[in-house]
Image 1: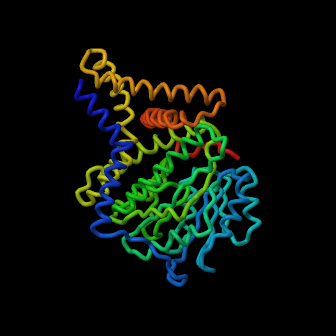
Image 2: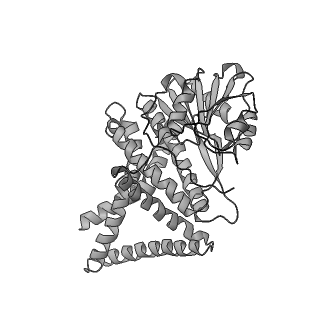
Image 3: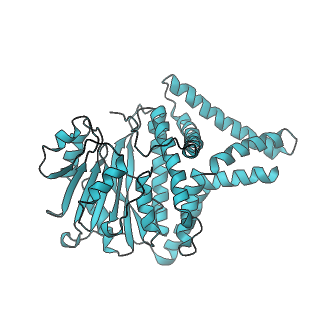
Length: 391
């Protein structure tokens, strides 16, 4: 039982904190030995031709802002194409886009899911680089330039931008928790990228070399993650570019955020099973180490080990196995009490920011368990059910 407890504690700690600490130490050593490389801006004539692909489904409330944002992007004249695909949209999204001749609009009345729309859009992309972004996110004006400068390096196959969550003073647990999570994720991605490669890209903003892009199966849930990881599996690096960012509002509430997280968890399980060669790759061992440490543990076993740690800790504490087990059990109980208080406060619309992190942590891990169940019971559709965002 002691072995089970300490193993559970170790894996949980390593997954959420330990890997970050280890990564930070490795990066410090690497910088001390080799120095730190900083990307430099590329002259206009050397930047590749690029296509911005936006998949939009019933986004009439955001699409005008997205169009204005896209047209304002700073990139050499004549080198950036805009392709918006609105398949299945039943509102005014396609109508609004059609008013802008600068944008190539692709629309079909049938809805086959985001990945089918992306595959269709890629048939019209003939530029060296392609950037994908969501319709309800807004890019900084230098985003495309900052991303595409990395393609001067032939080892780079994909570039991941940074996701930023807009948080106001009255943020609830979904906004504050998601914001904190993405700040921590951004730090890990910076270090992953500096060590070797980011492990997957988020759909809010990422880019690939057109020549390396390959269609993923139509039932793929996390198409952005799979598209980028298939490129990494070919031996190309995924670079993280924090100076290119996508800003979006948080989920409307915790229920909406939970819906999104469960879908991601189900997609994570699907991705892990489809990327089995990367779990123990002798050809790319560093990528495997990063992939397992940053993604696989979090999406599979760690939530179960959290439960096991609580159960075994309870048994050891009340079996008189030592003060350390009683202290650790008290710490676990206190943490989960804070999460429960956060849940109760959220239901009553009372904002106590100190409770947001433990509450959001528990929501995230519950979502993984629910997502695994949903995947294996085959209840997860590849068609995206949008989480409602704050307006």
